[in-house]
Length: 167
Image 1 (tube, helix red, strand yellow):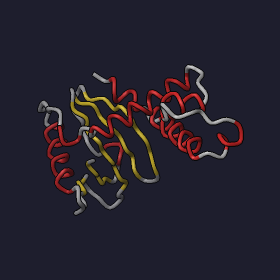
Image 2 (cartoon, rainbow, N blue to C red):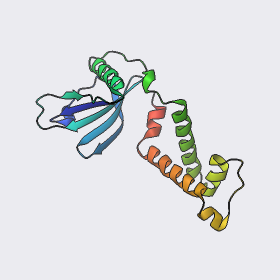
Image 3 (tube, helix red, strand yellow):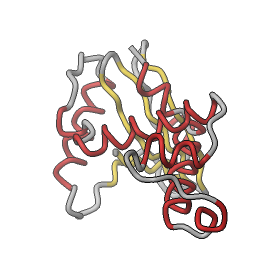
Image 4 (cartoon, rainbow, N blue to C red):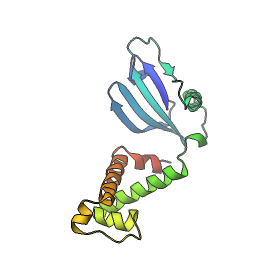
């Protein structure tokens, strides 16, 4: 993620023609956006900084500082209109891909009318014997599935599917 600080967040950076915001969220004084530029994705966090005469990049010295520097360089190339290749370092891991697939599968099953118990023993805990009654109501399996359902709804609400199918 590239962090930009600007007096006017709406005009902090001019992206080239053909770029498209996929997901946007405003949280306090920060505007988070994922922008598609060709096949590349640029994650930006624009912070309101009234004292800044010109927009500035902010790169914290944290464990992902190297990735942030690379992302800032990609953003700079995009603002010049250069083509960007897919950045393999920012792709989801195998675990993240399987989790996202599971969450989207849960959401699709919910949309088709499945209950949380159907999800638990049909998708999440396959091979387990279904729990019934009070045993189900107080079970850790039920709480786990309800957390997964909340995560799945959150992913879909913020436009994750648009990120997946964007070409």
